[in-house]
Image (tube, rainbow, N blue to C red; front, side):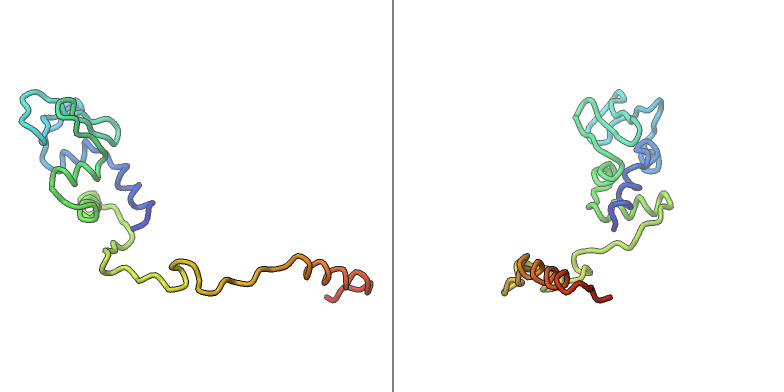
Length: 134
């Protein structure tokens, strides 16, 4: 999943996510589902939530993770399905491609360095001849 897709999911309103989860929200406040709450202490502002009693806070993805007990990828899947957000393919560790051996660590033999002397002598050779090939 791309970073852009994650940002789309994070930008979802936490208040709307809470309502999809069956939490009654009034005036941007709700009873906290993370502890035994008798007065509304869970507040929603923009795309963030915070409980002023127990201190839980976060964005829409972390809210789904904490309420439903899902991991990050499953919470993103749930949010995408519930809010009809189209995201690129979800890849897990088992389906990811192995990195190529060229990208892992230093190469066994270092690449030769370009020498400035060679470049200077090459350009000076052409300048002394008076013509540059096209």
